[in-house]
Amino acid sequence: MKKYIKDFEIKENISLTAQYSVLKLSPIDGQMPKTLPGQFVQVYVGNSRNTYLRRPISINYIDYDKNELWLLIRDAGEGTNSMIKSPNGSILNLIVPLGNGFSINNGHSLLIGGGVGVAPLLYLGKVLKERGNEVSFLLGARSKCDLLLLDMFSQYGNLFLSTEDGSMGEKGLVTQNSVMQTDFDFIQCCGPKPMMMAVANIAKERNIECEVSLENMMACGIGACLCCVEDTASSGNVCVCKEGPVFNINELKW
Amino acid sequence: MVNLNVKIGNIELKNPVMTASGTFGYGEEYADFIDLSQLGGFIVKGTTLHHREGNPYPRMVETPSGMLNAVGLQNHGVDYFINTIYPRIKDIDSQIIVNVSGSNVSDYVEVCEKLAPLEKINAVEINISCPNVKQGGMAFGTTCSGAESVVKAIRKCYNKTMIVKLSPNVTDIAEIAKAVEASGADSVSLTNTFLGMAINTETRKPYLSTITGGLSGACIRPIAVRMVWQVANAVSIPVIGLGGIMNGRDAIEFMLAGATAIQVGTANFIDPAITIKIIEYIQDYMVRHGIEDIKEIIGGMQL
Image (cartoon, rainbow over the protein chains, first blue to last red):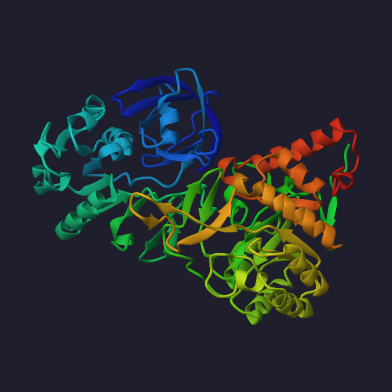
C-alpha cells in the first residue's frame, strides 16, 4: 500500500479522562489514504531534544464519510503529552498507513484489548461487522475510568468487560473473563505483552486461530532501521513495523 | 543554473547528497516518499559475506536529540543482495554504493570481489567502524594497522571506487584517515556512530540488549563536523561528511568544514523526504550567495 507523509488538521481533540484523548484528524488536502484495520501511523512530535523521533500510534477508527482518522492517545511521555495538549485546528504530520493489518475473517471474532491497546480493535470491529460477521469485544483495564469509547464499541459488537479492581464488568484479567469459555472462531488481540502472551496460550490450548498486534520500540516505521525486530519461527528477525505489527501467534516464538 | 556535481574517486554524483548506510534500507523503503533518482547517491545497508541475524531486541532507544542503536549488521548476505535486491534497484538513476562489512579481512575481500562485476555498483563503502558487532567491524577501524590490513587487501582485488567509513571512537581520527589514504582508499566517510550507552533507572537494566550501542542524530553533529575538518586538513582524497545532519544548513556546515559530499542518516527516520529538501536548500543557498559551483563551498570556512 502506498505510504504518504501528510498534514492532518485536528478537527476535534476529545479528552476522555485526564490520561486519554481521542484526536479526530482530517487530511489538509482532503485525500484520506486507504488504510486497513491494525495499521498504524508515525506522528511527528516536534523533533525536539526529548521528542526526537516520531511516535508510532495505532489507527483507532476511520470514518470515510466524514473524512476522519481517529487516534486514541494515552499520555505516556512528552511526545504523547504534546499530542493530547494539541488544540482543535492544529496540524499533525503523519506517515500513513504503516504495517500490515489484521486478517478480515468470515466467522465470529473475539477482539480482546487491554488498556490503550483497545485502539485498533474499534476500526477492526467496524470492518468485520460491515462484512456481516459476528463480533464480540472483550475489553480489559485496571479500572472503570480506563475503559474507553464503550459507546462506540457497542455499535459494532457484543461487549464484555473486565477490570482488575472490579469497578466495571467482571473483576480480574481478561483471560479470566467468562466469555473466554464460550465458542468463537478467531481471536484478535492488542494490549500489553503479558496479556497477549496469556491470550495466545489460551488460543493454542483451545486450537483457535489468533492474531496479536506488537508494539516493539521502533525508529523509522518503514522497515529501514531494523530496530523493532521480533524473532519469528519461519523468518528469524523481522521488522514489526513492516512485516507486522499484526502476527499470527504461530509465527511467534512465544 | 548552479552546478551541484561532485566527484568521489571515479564516480560522479549529480549532487553531494547521499544517504547513510543502515538508515535507508535498499532505497526501496523510501520510494513512496521521494524520487530516488534525485539523490546524488545512496548507500545500501551493511552487507556481509553470509547472512547475519543481527543482535537481539531491544535494539534502539531514543536519547536527547538522538538515538542509540544496536542492530548488529542484520542482512541476508552478499549473494542475496546480488540475486534479489540488485535487479530491483539497478535501474535507479543514482549512484548505488554498497556498504561492506566483515569479521575478517578475507570476508571483506570476498564480498568486494562478488560486487565488482555489477555494472551499476561502481563504488563500495568499507565499514571498519560498526560498534555493534563482536568480531571485526570497529576493531579494524580503531588502529592504523587494522585499517591498513583491510584497505590494502581490498585494493588488490577491487578497482572501482573504494570509500572507507571511519570510526569516531579513536584518539586521532586524522591518523587513521592518513593510513587509509596511504593504503589506497579513494575517499573516506565519517563519522560512523559514537559508542554510547543508556540505563533505565527504574528497572536498572540497560535499554539495549547489547548494553552499548551507536549514538546518532543531531547530538553528535558538532563532534562530527570537527572530525571532518581535521581529516579534510590531513588527507587529499575527498571526504564524505556525516553525523547528525538534519537539514540543508547542516549539510552546508559539513561542506564548509571540508566535506566534498554528505550523507543523511537518522534524519530520514523523522522526515523520509528530507534528502530532497536538503538538495533544494543547497541550490537556494548557492543562489543566495552567488555561488555557481558547489566546489566553492567545499572547505570554504573562513577564518
